[in-house]
Length: 161
View 1 (spheres, rainbow, N blue to C red):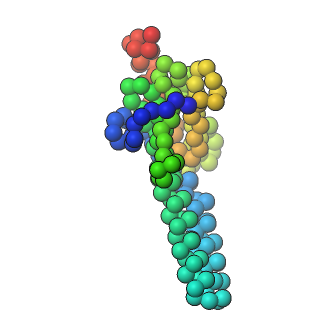
View 2: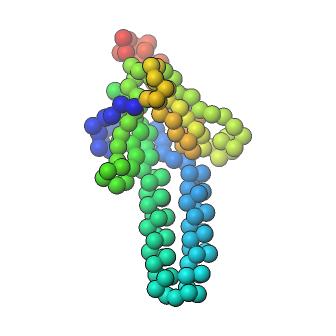
View 3: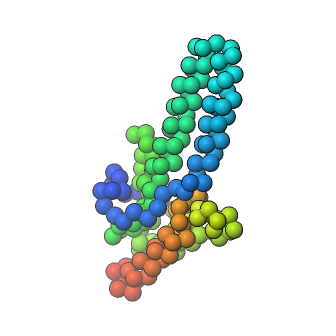
């Protein structure tokens, strides 16, 4: 993947999508386990343990929610980019330039159609290791259509020549 110097997709570019509601299911189950089972058990032992469990649970669940919300797929004049990360050392932008893009695809299934949550792939013409592969993206089917349409317009107008 190629790095871009943009600090956030809002600085320029057209936002496409973020993670779908299905990406939060694992975090919801973890929160139910931590707050619904482990916290009451800690209260039976002592209040200090319960406070520790509560603090750790809030930090873990909060981090996971913020991390999922940080995924933003967008495009600009240069290419298609994925921004994600919330901690300074994990923030980053990676992507595929229009001139190097092969095609955007999604993986269809009954569950993805029902939940409107798709796995999408933005291929790189020269190397598979530089492609963008994202699971549980909201309206991925529409995003793939928009990306391929824009890419074809750029090719037809000889911008990528």
